[in-house]
Image (cartoon, rainbow, N blue to C red; front, side, top):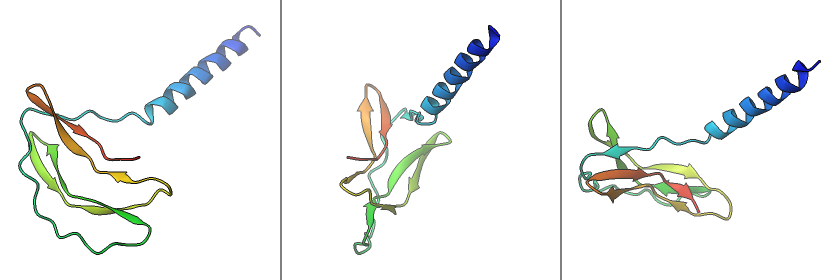
Length: 99
């Protein structure tokens, strides 16, 4: 019977780590600044949705354009779009989020 508490503790630890890792985000670092944003035609407002503007993604050693899209609203929050921020000689992607 001494194994049962150990197995329970191990299972609880694994579940805790798994749930913590599920919310982990990849940190994206680029060696140089992104190009200027592209001009986008923002569609008319859409009830229940927030517009997430297009942005440059770092992919395969270069920047690729990701067009804007609608995100379902979260009641009581506003959408803060993702953006690139200079970090020393590199650039880091700050993901969009609800605030």
